[in-house]
Length: 142
Image (cartoon, rainbow, N blue to C red; front, side, top):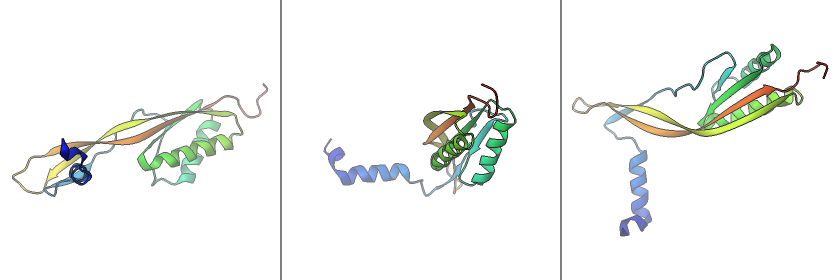
């Protein structure tokens, strides 16, 4: 019990869990996609922001009732920014519904030597799901 209160000992234990073992190569799997469809957009840090914005605006102007944006980890801020830009572009005729959560991501551990077995480890990442839906059509009689 005395070891748990020692800050140095506690930091060493956390570092061992976070650092991958030197005997394994870590291969990150792609996260599971919650839903597929034309109106579902997965926001990443690598995709061009303007292209994502144009795609969302095109979907909403062509009559799509709602679009769903998904973002993980570092892309959460970009996903929020994209939703706010869409809302501003449609002059208040869209509403936003936001859900946050945690996603389990699986990494494969490939041994670097022949005497070790393959393995897997689970890590957690923050996620956001933003639903943008039209409340009124621009130029329509209300």
